Amino acid sequence: MTSSAFPQAPLAHTLAPLGWDDAWAAEFTPYAEQGCVPGRVVRVDRGQCDVLTADGIVRADTAFVTPHDPLRVICTGDWAAVEAAGNPRYVKAYLPRRTAFVRSTSSQRSEGQILAANVDHAIIAVSLAVELDLGRIERFLALAWESGAQPLVVLTKADLVPDPVTLGHLVQDVETTAPGVQVLTVSSHSGEGTDVLGAIVADGTSVLLGVSGAGKSTLANALLGADVMEVQAIRDVDGKGRHTTTTRNLLVLPGGGVLIDTPGLRGVGLFDAEAGVGQVFSEIEDFASQCRFHDCAHEAEPGCAVLAALESGELPERRLESYRKLLRENQRIVAKTDARLRSEIRRDWRLKSAEGRANYSAKRGNRI
Image 1 (cartoon, rainbow, N blue to C red):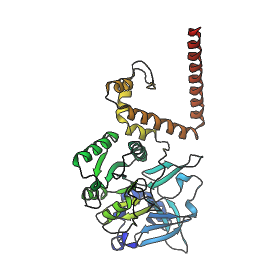
Image 2 (tube, rainbow, N blue to C red; image 1 turned 45 degrees about the vertical axis):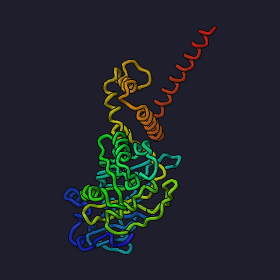
Image 3 (cartoon, rainbow, N blue to C red; image 1 turned 135 degrees about the horizontal axis):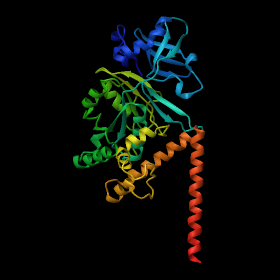
Image 4 (cartoon, one colour; image 1 turned 120 degrees about the vertical axis):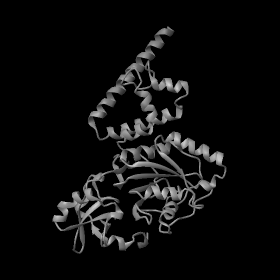
């Protein structure tokens, strides 16, 4: 990342281009009284971070904001209170977050990992160079909705699908998968859609998400109007490439707004995202509200509106299976940190096991 991503002159007078407003200023008042200066975290390394202040980039130590809870460590996008002087200078605190994009780590401890803070738009980049993975899109959307940001799905490399009919079908598939979410086709090569995307991201802070090879760095360069992010070749066979972004970076966009670019995500694990899952599958939630029983599990209960929609064809079977899968996964994650929920799951499991044994015994008795 080069310093050209940070136009210094405007920042010498105001932090407004970074998203600073009266509400942030009010939150910062106690730290201003302590002699600290405000700034936005643009990058975090081990024990240190780069903070963009009104006077430029400050390298600061994070010893005071490194708690044991991984969700409370300082993150790209945070607004920080930095010592006005010193060598080294320290981040004394960060302001309460308005939104936070969190995923589950790949560790067995099922900890959450915060990827970006204070985000208005969650841009999910999906490459059209490979077959669409609708289930993965649903995962990203669940995390995006849970974060408090507004999701946006960007289908990159649209120039690789020259047939407008085929492209239309692909867009329709994603729109069905992402109710209430804008789906935009973009080609960094031809420039298609980049003006529309630029207008969206000009309003607030956006985080760019996706797997390796989705075209995030190329898209970031198109929005920046310069080759700030390194782009490496993608294999033609499977559309995959090496990670071109290795850290989360906050970039000031020339057309307004800021963009947080993230490394390609190999895993998209849910982390306490039940509300986000419900938002992604809002049509299933609507059907569920019409079920005869308020605690309907949508398995074999009488008067189940979800199963009726499945039978009538209103609800695709793939959507229901994906909904069930994500809810189960989210429940397992939450149960690892919630003793009461673990107990409830074990009780339900024992009841279902007992019912299964009773049904099996009854069937054997009928054969005799």
